[in-house]
Length: 396
Image 1 (tube, rainbow, N blue to C red):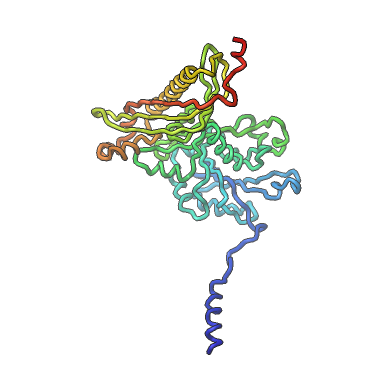
Image 2: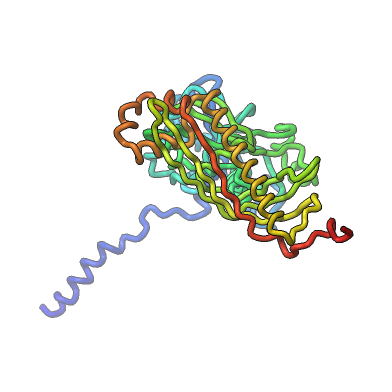
């Protein structure tokens, strides 16, 4: 009996030792790093997957072959097409490492909520991959354009987007979760990054493109895609995209600010915060956008004395006026040209004046289009690099 008491716990624990019953060896699976979705020629969708060729990522073992492989299928269901890819690929595909979703411009204008629903609820995907719109180019070509430094195209695009966001602020680093949050929000319309291919797309598909000092084909971020609900309606350029990001309080960037006739100062924004106050003046919504930022003076072409506090005050005013003008021009363009609230002013109004917002929420984009927007920037220039003097003023 004593032996049975000792044996029983061991027998019960055996049920917990089933191990990874569905495990797969690495040489039995392939990791998808990018997916492209666009209109098909003979069906509703054309889906292209970019699969990492792991053997070519090891510099010592690389044989000069392509670092990734793409394969395309057409059909009427994204779910079925992704599961059907093995008609041309040998290994079981794993989508959990997908970093980039590239959507064709044509299908984006028709509406993308149908397949986004599948991608969000699917257990195969994480929702933190970057969403991009292929402008004036096939979405599949984005996954086929090689680059010598980052060999896998979809990873190159993912890193490119994140780095531009961190260094210059010209990309919102929009993930699937962010897009869906805006799509389902009361008071905000979604956006996505836009990209294209500069040069000859055909040459970019060759491994030879990786061996040139100046690649013949290069994937380039070109700004922001503006949506009304799930349909693409237009674009903002890179500078306008940076202004959009600035209103979201997520900015580090470098500015070139006039300080004289054809002379400029170079300013690095190192910390920034935006605050939005909402109100109604009669029947017109009013928003006050306040930007507070710390900046460093990276360089100057002017001969202003950097040892005087008046010089810094002047530069701060010049920077603030430029920032205010840039942001207001972008907001006004979106109001007049696209008539959709991509900035989230409606969300602010809902938080601060819930009842007023609820009365107009179904017509909020129309309300936004006629809203009065004021932008105020407060810039604090902290220091002028490693020297308070400029050699430009030494002879004076």
